[in-house]
Amino acid sequence: MERLLITGAAGQLGRVMRKKLAPLAKTIRLSDRAPLDPPAENEECTQCDLADASAVNELVAGCDAIVHLGGISVERPFSEILDANILGLYNLYEAARAHHQPRILFASTNHTIGYYPQSERLGPDAPYRPDGLYGVSKCFGEALARMYFDKFGQETALLRIGSCVPEPVNYRMLSTWLSHDDFVSLTEAVFRAPVLGCPVIWGASANDAGWWDNSHIGWLGWRPKDNAEVFRDKLAANTPKPQPSDSLVRYQGGAFVDDPIFEE
Image 1 (cartoon, rainbow, N blue to C red):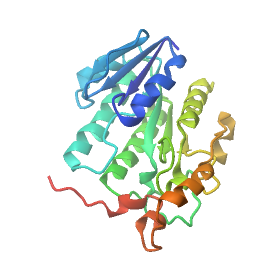
Image 2 (image 1 turned 180 degrees about the vertical axis):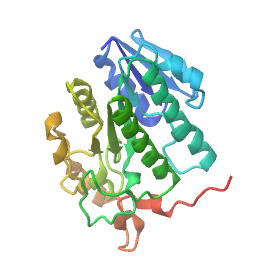
Image 3 (image 1 turned 120 degrees about the vertical axis):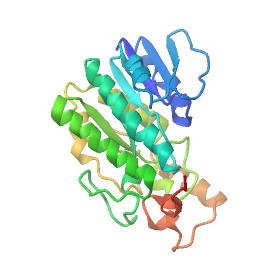
């Protein structure tokens, strides 16, 4: 690719992918509402609020593909979620429509289905059961992306990220963990595919304790290589096991189901 846009590049995952996705394009355009570190030789840095339609339009211009990590990623007051995850995403899709529809990898979340019990194995068609307003905003995002595909042909990978961190830090993550390297290989597969469409993809590595079925995307050629099971003994040695009544071991969304609705 000539130019890849990564939004949310100042966030925890964005900072990692800024380096790991650099080989995918001649130029990496980085964006966040927060300040960014100075650009490397093949980087462009733009401070941009996703709620600003004009700024987002300029941000997307000239890009061949987008990894959309931007927005609110935890439970927050609805006004913040509204601006970043709902209005901001609409602005991104309108900008993409105006600029030749670059393919998008949309960072959705497992919190779209957080109220399912951990005893259930889910495919891509499981009805939404969001565990908070953040999860609701990602349900909106998936629906918006699907509409733009059906109406305009805008291709998007709807990636329901589990826990994309260096290693699992609690027992739930033995099921939800997505390694950084598996995220990179998935991103490569998404942008390599001749035809993508608008598939739901469960963002998890090849975990023995996994709950999510990705068999429907075999055609994509993505084969995650990492497995959270290698961390089980370390976790057991350092982390007390939760009680059976704890949300962390009852619900797929874990502790997010306990988060309050923030008052404005």
